[in-house]
Amino acid sequence: MVVDFNSLLSNTTNHTVTVPKPYIEDGFTLTTGSGSPYTSYGGGLIYALTPSNPHWLGSPAVYSGVITNYGSFFTLERVDGGVFDLLSMDVALLNNYPHFDVYGYLPNGGSVHQYNSIPYIPQNYNSFQTLSYGSNFKGVNKLQFSSVYAQVDNINLSVAAAVPEPETYVMMLAGLGLIGAIARRRKAKQIS
Image (cartoon, rainbow, N blue to C red; front, side, top):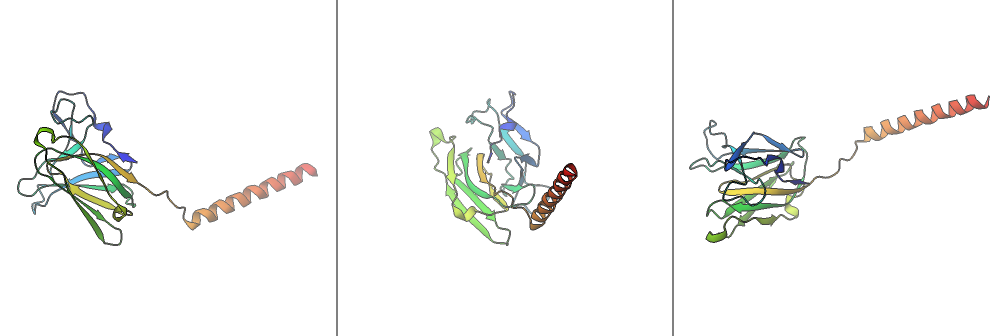
């Protein structure tokens, strides 16, 4: 599954559009936060680039407003609180800040971290680079990643198929048994 933000594509002459928070796509919610101790800062806004933006790269990637002196970050979680795997995401610089950190949080309280250095090429700094994540990012229930001077798109995730609870099997077997009993009773009625 890929969170691609394509639903944010709009026909406007504005360079950016403000994205409602939380942003929800494919069962995932995206919010922003900041390192600020002031709760009124709230992590800034989520923006999507539009085709009229000089940094447009062909799809409506998102970035967040910068909280001066505190930075900002995105938080990505499943709406149902379940676990998922981070496989990759596309990242492009909006400025010459080449750092992109990703933190994954595990249900047992542990965490994983991957630092990415994105090369700054002044004449072509606005091109996507696909960042891949290994087995460390399997089974996380929350991601937090840089959103300072970086636009993010095509977050490639894997969600394990839900395994039915044992009660589900009991109900299914009881239902099949009931259907079988009804069928036998009808057949016996037809014979007599």
